[in-house]
Length: 209
Ligand SMILES: Cc1cc2nc3c(=O)[nH]c(=O)nc-3n(C[C@H](O)[C@H](O)[C@H](O)COP(=O)(O)O)c2cc1C
Image 1 (tube, rainbow, N blue to C red):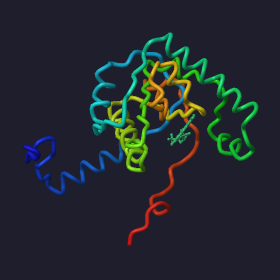
Image 2: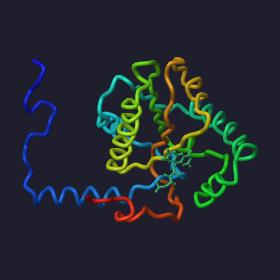
Image 3: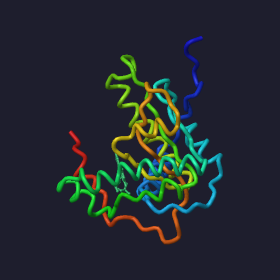
């Protein structure tokens, strides 16, 4: 049977009042989601990560690597810092300096070894996997995962070292897979601070026709 009513789909019609409460509660929670860079090395229950990965819409275009091993994390950090050092000391443009100034970032990436877990989504390459819809899926899947991580009370950082192919070598993945982003996951350090930047108000990003 190709279709099943009520199979893996919410079929119950929720009353509007309850929907309003649910959407407000989701909004209140999501507006507190911030990228952090100061992770505590306190352990995180593995089932929280597992559940967040299970929340991702399934797709054959992706593969997720979950790294908790200290030696692998150190190797990724060493390689990432080598790339970032070149970027901050040699390749950085004035434009990029302006973008990064409010974030206060530098070539040092302690979060890679401090965070107890690193998740790396890999995208498969090849003609059937390189169309636009496959790229759109990347954003959807990473977004759902990050939302689930925050919902589960954990923090993350969207880290995109450039170039990123060294992660594929560190994790011994085949050449036809590309790492999309490096996502350290954990609790924030006690004294964790975030950049003093604000989200745009809704009227600056939404046009209702
Ligand atoms: C595609 C993408 C790539 C990013 N790459 C990095 C990165 O390499 N290093 C970093 O510190 N933050 C990175 N960030 C995080 C942004 O700096 C972050 O979104 C910004 O600080 C806004 O913070 P907020 O999400 O807490 O509001 C990236 C974000 C996005 C969307």
